[in-house]
Image (tube, rainbow, N blue to C red; front, side):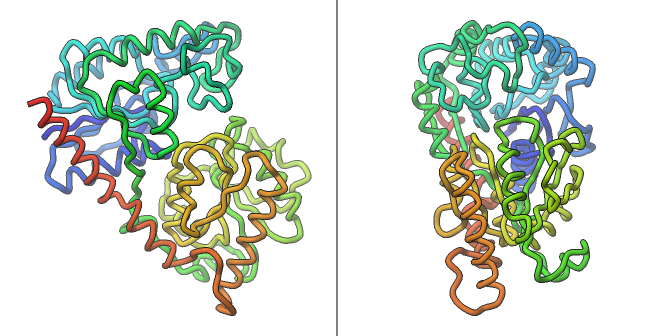
Length: 418
């Protein structure tokens, strides 16, 4: 069985790590696995091919912002992708995130539709069934056709023109040809939304994201990690991942306000901080910012030594950073947005009303106190911590479990084709 995955990135960020995990596990299982990705760092790994080039991506992003149309540029990059597909001759194409200014959607889908290649498509957000938005927030126009978009300035941004109605119709026509598709999402929330969309004609199912819980994301010694990075053993440490904080969806203002409100109580560490966002930190003297890192070892050590991980996103699917933190033994506080509440059931964390600063602060304080009870062993903690929490994630969200479920889908799809 030859599987080709297509995504914007490889092993950089949430969906990209999922792609890398599936690829690595498929190879371990003796399957023929290939990955084609459009942007990001070029990697030297077996059967992994980057087909996009930076100048093409910058040009496509400019067109998107100026003309308000995204996914209709990058013909050169997409020709290289199609050539690679011809070379690989996959039995199944596994699609992931197709936005990111790296792909010409009509070219790719006209080829897939003409060749009648079976597709498994994992939705990591809502882009495939909206006019342009990765997340639709409170808007429901995507149910019948977009237009007059209330989120036109959110990613993918348009400065002046609203072509969302046109793009919605084009996507529906391109994406719903034939019957050889299975739609997968990581959360029951998104699976339910997909079934309401024009993809409802296809089988839509949930497969939880998996992470490498055996070799990368597992609990480290808290004391050793704190000593290594210069933090006191009794300090209360709150951790967040700050990548993408320029996007209002990521809820940066809530974690910055949390820092101000807990100034005398805890330190907040933000990994993946971009210096251009320094203006946000005014009045928050207890925030420690660290640049983005490609070191999963460092991430796992920071996850392990934190008392609580916070995810202030206003819209989210099934965040891998949440899984990573919990796999390292640290409970999570987030908003009741998208699939976040599903991730925190079973005493793994606390989900509060979206955008409610008071509830957010209170939940963080509750977890900090609960963490202290757990560390000191002076009573029974209300939440799972440490190895007990990590074991739950190993059982529910391992790479092996996720890949096995995808393999079952691949095989079932090929049986239906043959």
